[in-house]
Length: 490
Ligand SMILES: C[C@H](O)[C@H](O)[C@@H](O)C(=O)CO
Image (cartoon, rainbow, N blue to C red):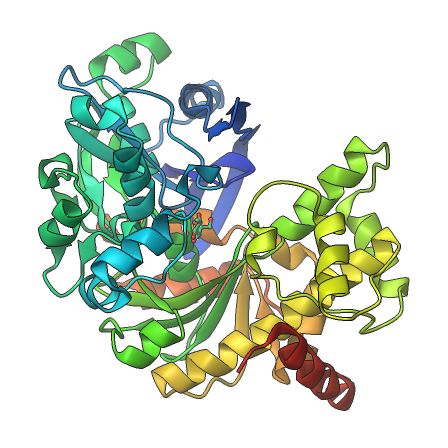
């Protein structure tokens, strides 16, 4: 049975999965899992991109040693970040991490100069301080020599795919996350790019998910002793792949991709770029099958990950299952935060920031890890309700429930509280959403599936979906009212 290979790179870890189709059932095998540790140098925070490429090679070697020669491979990763390539075809430096603070204030200055109406009207993308447009504007403001030497800009998966094949292409779903791609033109927006003082020539041809873009280059084949494995551009923005894998049977469905970030929204045939979408700060990221992902970023489990890191530094090592158990035992609805308050974006002491947020909002701050984790998870669940209501309003759809996918669904408490908060069932699964969407797009390109809907059905038949029915409606409705008032959410 032939296998295909998916590389799924998240902000904290990556994995290589082999996928096989056994009588219309998908079987996956994780052959390599690896850390993704950003490196701080002075005030700068950067990705260790060569280490990530080394791990892609390890994935191919482990497949070979397992007697597997995948018939294709694809790469997906987090969005917005990029590498710059010089005139000699070489990388000019390690890509910066989107949480690097060099973009502080840049979005505000750029919006003041170009107006939010113009930027959103041409890109349809939500305003987030780390969007590629502001990372480039920050380089421009800093008069960075990188911009003088750069000849090509490649997003993270584009860059790793270039390392594998020697071919430079920009993939659609990730290109849209730059806020420099115009979905109405169906191409990069040269006017916006020039308006931030960058050359449009940096931006290369855009290919759609499912495009074959070359094969493993000769030198790498020799180095690893592997064949010319074909390489596909999948929906390379991991959230794009996760949405592709949502096992929905209904055409109008709501999803929540749950990991370091929480991405909530729906799938639309055309970008929703009106004034309401801009005011509510929704985004229209590229999807599969010519669709768009109308969604909103929610800070997600990052706040919990950073809290755990802070406690660990203080000598208190608690695993996620233990933290969730302590949260369950803590008093309910003690305090709330708006997870999307800017105070929670950058790395640092989240428990202290939560205490400050509570003090600033006249709340008694939770004093134990259990109380803090409960505050984070309850607040996330309530923010999910808020964003789901906005999604229904903006898309003019009504959703019978919420599909949750991604590593975060292993947190059963969060799934249950999300159902309680939204007052609708949560259908949780699959865990490996992005990797499965990556595989699905390769199989569609190879004719194994007629389209994304057949792929979603086979994913549904192959991986369990856990159903969480809503409970304690009255208590969560009351909490929702308090949460919105505290967070100042209209
Ligand atoms: C910045 C984040 O990477 C991005 O908004 C999010 O969609 C993502 O890619 C999560 O992995």
